[in-house]
Image (tube, rainbow, N blue to C red; front, side):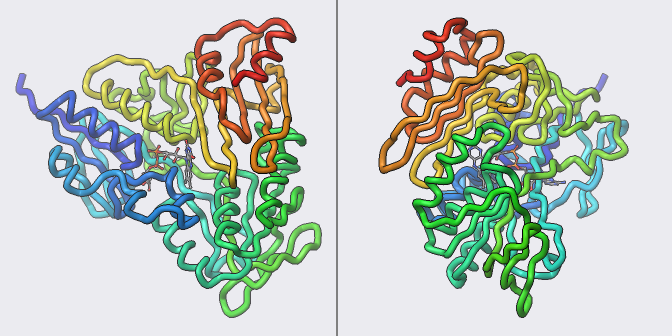
Length: 411
Ligand SMILES: Cc1cc2nc3c(=O)[nH]c(=O)nc-3n(C[C@H](O)[C@H](O)[C@H](O)COP(=O)(O)OP(=O)(O)OC[C@H]3O[C@@H](n4cnc5c(N)ncnc54)[C@H](O)[C@@H]3O)c2cc1C
């Protein structure tokens, strides 16, 4: 039987896709690799975008790869190219430039795009921004330099990053969210209050339990927003953090199973032979918690990229890791480890709130299942985080109150 070099196609050049391409090249020097993105840039660090937004770092520091890196590795890098459909029976990927790219193995690593603000007055009004891409960040920065009043909208990580950026750039900032407090799926009212106090220290007005009813523009730019509860909030720019929609539309019509994300097993294989998924877009089986879930973190996408690259080239490695998310939160830190779900009735919680540095508070919340530590949320000092991650990994038993108290105060 004639053999040919193996052909790999990767949709998305985020950290998952680019890491998979790098791993494939290391494992198979002769294969052909097409790495496709609709964006104009090689891999950049999305996690650094908030610091670029704040003016703490310059654009160059956000970039991770350049075009030469792809050439040196003989990776065919297609930018500003949108994948429009996939034909799994013929094993072909089709792009908006009319290319038909055959593959032996395909990686879906297309992440998600931000949900827009859909209220009266928003459509056609300028200076209403999502915050996901480098281009988003550049346009927000340009507007911040001429803006006076800003509204950050949403109870997500992205909304607080926007709020943080506006406040640090000294805009008169309001933070509006529908929920009763920030990060409602993981925090509780006390943790929410800790975060509010930090934001208020930076001059932010925080409003919970209300939502934008309409945007009132003047000369095509926002003047103020009206809320459902009758408030009028001045804002000449609006940043939106209302979650993302995972990019799977090009899989419509294929047998690839898609639920909230593209469903894969612990080897990152879909139900269709030769098709893999990695990163934000993957709804993967997590052996630590014995169920499928999606995970929107950098480390998870990087780890997925590596494993997908190995397995696409014929390996058989499972992805097993404790997900962690760490990020600055105004002048403190936030870390989320493992399963931190306040509304999950299977979990028991223990919390600690104590004075911290710079006039802030430290807040720690632990989540236990079957007496094992399965999740951690920390606001303030990050001391003890690595030890806590180890405790989650080791699945150690903490049956007594005294044992749990010791974990709460672990430094
Ligand atoms: C502002 C911001 C701050 C963040 N901060 C943190 C943090 O502090 N810590 C942390 O752990 N995580 C953070 N994250 C999340 C983290 O960046 C993501 O989890 C990670 O980058 C996901 O990588 P990915 O490779 O799965 O997808 P992505 O980086 O989303 O890459 C997917 C790429 O595929 C492209 N694409 C989509 N559809 C198509 C198509 N049809 N054709 C061609 N290309 C397509 C997309 O445009 C994109 O370029 C942050 C994210 C943002 C936006």
